[in-house]
Image (cartoon, rainbow, N blue to C red; front, side, top):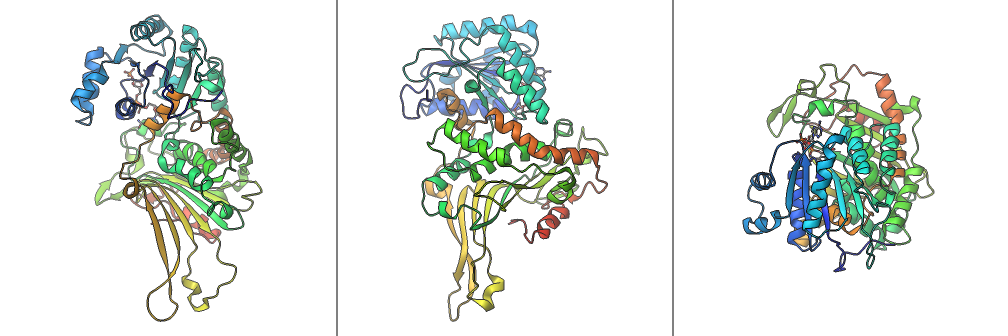
Length: 509
Ligand SMILES: NC(=O)c1ccc[n+]([C@@H]2O[C@H](COP(=O)([O-])OP(=O)(O)OC[C@H]3O[C@@H](n4cnc5c(N)ncnc54)[C@H](OP(=O)(O)O)[C@@H]3O)[C@@H](O)[C@H]2O)c1
């Protein structure tokens, strides 16, 4: 059975979308705008309804008004009026078993009113501590009738799918426990572990660049590639979410490296799949996760760096240090910056290090993949050799979406002077559209039953294993130099030292 395709008019079966955490930030900022844009562009079921569930008191009308007010004019008022007729709100606590008699009957009433049958998408847009109670309550409610199947063309069976937000566990054991809770209610085919990075155009473009062009793939291996850097840096700090970030489940290694950056790495490193479908892509990604070298505990100081920002300046404005944020412990050891060297032990990638790093309150906001190529086997332009820089492919995932190829060129004029030049594919200039933030693409995939861009349980469990020695080492060995970088810089000097030991440097421009 395969999921329905984008161009298929039967791609979307009518369904009810139930969002738990409907009063929260993600719902109003990302999920409702994404669903609105899918509806507006005809990439949604002919008939569907959205039911928001959370404890805050709203009526359906006041909830619609709140969403519209929040959008600050980004919805066309007439279209919103039409669209919002399918939005409902139910005040109640989905983690409390006692609330479910009412939640279930509201779900059934709306499904009946809109003739949606039993097709349901459950979206867990709540903090991770609420995932398991809600999943258990969904299981006990009897609303999952056919969670073990997803619907394909011509098949009349109803489907129920669950979308689960990050963070997915905080260590290998908690990830396995959450996977087991999910598996007790839903089949793996119905579970959509979302990572909005995988909805980004440039991450998906990686697959196209690699597998639809013959010029890149021959070079995509340890014969030509020296190393790869994957960076996700933010200029903002924790911005009032200190209490959440400073918890045992917080920090850059858990929040970013283990999840988003490992996923990007798997797209970068995977072998060509037999077909471009979810099953084959997941099979290839899984091989990469299995090949991740788990670092030895005693090697952690050599291959990983923890950082934490102190006060500084970003864009000329003062920024307070992490430990001064509300909810953060004065002696906090939480990593607001994490860098790690990773090896993928396969034939293709033997000996090629992947450097992953992520930080808050950094000098620049960017998510990028930089592929550094090896030098030419023989330097012909000897006197210019010192200036010769490695060839690079730079994939700007966000912002300034695009792909840049950096290579050496001749400076105009007499003599053979060389300088690096850039060939630039700029996404916005090329396509004249703003890239999606990922949620519309991913929600469309869930509606069509396409799991290609969602994480399989095995990927999650293995990627936790690969970072756990680092987390254990950091927990056992408090660092007395924290905070060790100023807000508005490129992170701690220890990260530069880690690269310098390998005779390499970070791509900080
Ligand atoms: N915001 C983002 O940009 C973003 C991005 C990526 C991933 N995520 C993930 O998405 C999820 C939701 O994030 P968010 O930013 O929307 O969170 P949020 O604003 O803090 O709130 C989410 C919801 O949790 C509910 N809630 C709070 N305490 C509760 C309790 N004790 N029992 C039951 N419900 C409770 C709240 O509703 P009531 O208080 O009304 O019940 C609220 O609707 C999180 O897992 C987050 O990691 C968020």
